Image 1 (spheres, rainbow, N blue to C red):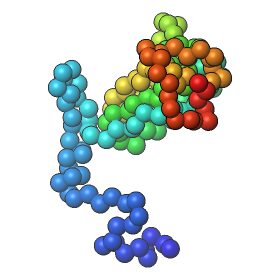
Image 2 (image 1 turned 90 degrees about the vertical axis):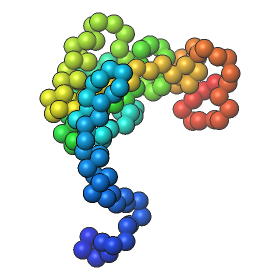
Image 3 (image 1 turned 30 degrees about the vertical axis):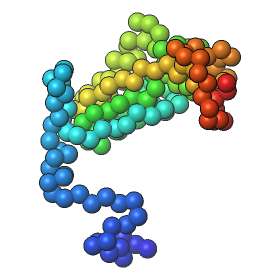
Image 4 (image 1 turned 180 degrees about the vertical axis):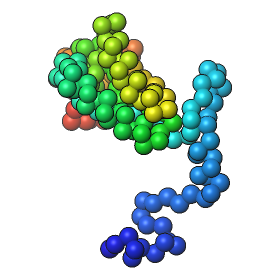
Length: 161
């Protein structure tokens, strides 16, 4: 079926039709009440796990360039707010093998480059600092650390308890 054959009066499966008022609202800036930070519009690139780092969690120059190009593309796409994927704070406790790990000030230049790739397009970037706790990937650690000893009851192929 071509685009021309689709009846424009009937939404396709998974499509979303917005009224003019809805579109205008989404295009308006959003001010966070506590910080007074203004986001240019109400579109947000959701957090996700990219798995683009080196196996130990670092980014060499080619990996950093790939990473910043990806985030720059999301900013160019018009998102007012870009949430990063998991940025792990402990090299031994990661949600996935290729998560980025930030442990000290040696990582600041990498973070700055990443942020600038988004900010130069007028978007705001917020980092999702993460520690998976008891959901740490089984190949990363044999002894997950968490505030509670309560086990996760659902089995997941990537989790080992």
